[in-house]
Image (cartoon, rainbow, N blue to C red; front, side):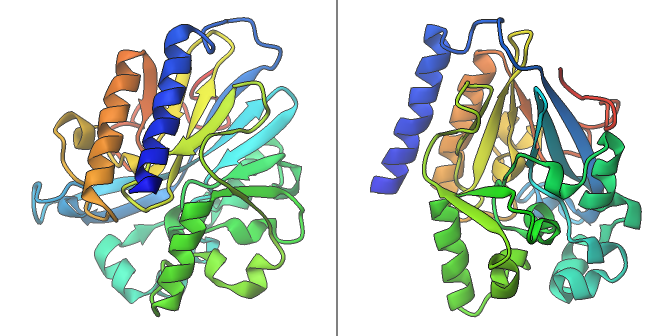
Length: 292
């Protein structure tokens, strides 16, 4: 209960800051742009993303990750699927997941290949903000072995992952492999985290899908705000109709997160869902910015 209250207080504090105008100034030193990449799709029954909705009806759910330009620095939010998914999905994520989600991915969709569109390699990034530890978001963290690039993860999410592994289960994340983790620069954070200290990239928890999932608020130079939700919001339909996702850790927490999203929409924050089949249609994809 204490953790839930802490999350609520942190997010409410952020909303208060928005309301009193701390984020309202359009004068920013750093140029900020959001680039969106699609790391293939998941062919899956709709009820796996919108519980008890259009049961048995399949759709193509995109797997995005994002790279944000902040002045001369670059930050990734999530990393998409494991690269091996393009060649051998069962080896990459297991038969149970391929049966349920059936990933479709080409070798060129892999994180380290796609960011070449921006002239980048993994070691060129200033940081990675990881929303949560599931395979379709943390899948390419092994690209950052021995780079020294800090990877920011909420403390509660790492505790969730450790418990999952201790219970003999798997989320098919590179973070489950000690040989990979020892070569990564993992930075544990707790609560609201201002990446550059200038309020342009602010990560904060929005739990429910997993206990420690975090979202990323991006402040654009024109004064606009964009919230990259990851799996705190699968599709816009989830929040518009109050439909639980097919995978979740705590229904009460995700419904609370939906309420937070509604407040942020009232404050004119652009909400970006993760796996919405309709959302990315017609949106600019890298190398063009989706938001600037």
